[in-house]
Image (cartoon, rainbow, N blue to C red; front, side, top):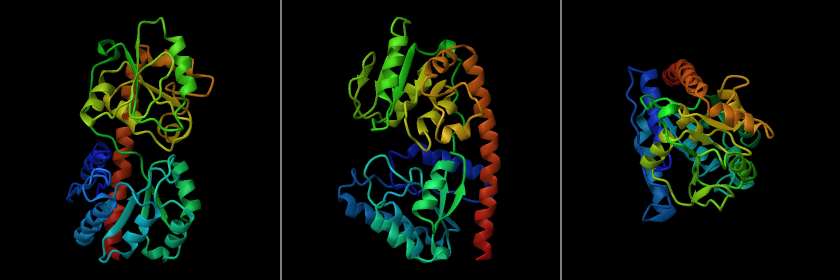
Amino acid sequence: MNPLRFALEHYVNAAAETLAAAAPCSVVKVSSFVEPSQRKGGRIGWILDYVEALWKARTADVVIVAWPVLGAIDAVILALLPGQAKRYIVYHDPRPLVRSIGYGRVSRKVAGLLPAKRMPIAIVHSLAAEFDLKVDLPTLQTYHLPHPTMSGERTAGTSSRDRAIRVVGQFKPDRDVETLELIGEQLASAGYSLEIIGRGWPQVRGWRVRPEFVPEDELTVLIQSARLVIVPYRRYYQSGIALRCIESRTPFIAPCTGGLAELLPEQSKFLYSKNDWSRAVTFALSEEAGGEITRIAEELSQAASARYSQFARVALERRVVE
């Protein structure tokens, strides 16, 4: 179930594709509705859409909510949902970087009052997310799955890409502007086009900034055509942009913290520490990077296939037992 149709379209499509491959004898259906900000009836109308969608899904074997828009309250809603469906919620960011509904002390206390056996299971994509969720919502059982990726988004090697080095995605307080400015200085005379495209970005020295919303289709093109994508986070649980780069075989660099450090091979050359970004940039711009990102994509796809197959068996078997 996708309660944020536009923001989560790619993630939900990837999850549905991965689950369908993992459980070929089952039918995977996606129910989507627009974000509260896009709904004519506002948040109240969105909540009614959400409850209606959950009610219709109550006869399913398994229900997965792709994003907890109401934080801990989502867990309460699913716990109170009638029917025998096995219920899951994907908690991407247990401690959001921006102020969000449902993550405060009162919401967490209300969720903690319900018996653990009625609570949904939380799907997480990183150990850091799992740790924080167990601290904040200890009655939730967790299930750790790799971030799903789409198949079929393949592009040519680095030699055929643009001379563009890009940062894509919305600006948030955790973005490492200082490192971006240092990278801009290093590459100022190298002939690359340094571009930042995303809503809310301030001007960054050495970069051309387009502070605007990026539609899904354009985001795909921007990633696939880039020579290098930079993921400039200070703190993060996982990066959807980095996963999109892996799908497209587009070299990227990111800090060696958060979910990517778990996902990529140990000592991956695409990851950098605070003072090691120059080495990562140099490697990611080399011809060697194309072969390395392809190898990583294939290994992750194989690992995800095994993990999701196991998840499908557990989810469906537990439904039968109950």
